[in-house]
Length: 313
Image (cartoon, rainbow, N blue to C red; front, side, top):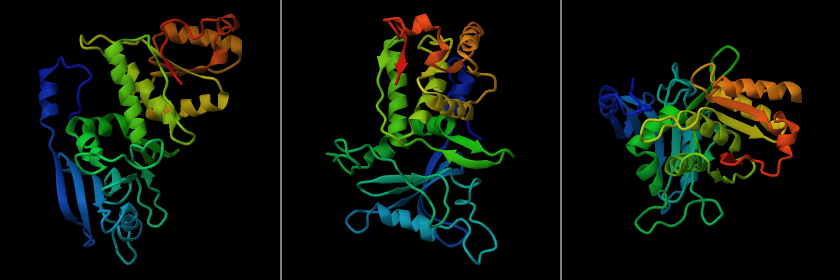
């Protein structure tokens, strides 16, 4: 249904297919239940996002959120069928509520129980967005996020479906702005500086740092430089707590696109060290472990982490 950007730019046919993708924005779209949605974003004719837009001169972003919760019902009472554009999981992948000042988003509409998450830049350490000299505070949404290459990358690489034990889709993960910004900046820094740098990414509690680490691990494991050379043979994800280790394992397995690319190190300290050596020598793309996996003398080494080891904390 779409050709996403190839990891390597060596195949002109794939590059031509990628350039042929058609992204469109439709205004005032009438649904099958006679509701009107302000914007619908389409990829090759398939709706992938909706948006309700308000102006803070008359209504703030909360009015747009309330419209989704109370007026944009995927299964309205008294209707024999669901609204295809809003129904989960066959409808649009994400729904945006925005105004001049704020953006929020949700991936599943559940009537009054719908949960919207902020999709803002932050303003001097607080919530919201900073003033923009040339226009609206929310300009980044259409100028950066919905920009053609950015939007295609998000749909291909950031959107993750979570499934239950029967393989049914139970949730869709869409990155919040700070997750999108942090992972993209890190990848660009590695491309510019090469491997071996140290970077500090600061996340507050509950802001999705586990997912940010999982995205980063996958992106770095597939990263190639301008000469089409792979930058990392393996990506090692090291945590200092067993609970975080389990969370990382679950997230990275959920995010993986190909089976057999992730190795999880388990067992006692002695067996963990052996498993780690085997995983590294076997060329596993992503290896998840705790710091206790490493031999004790290495952990006590004053130069830990080892020289030229990239750190994501």
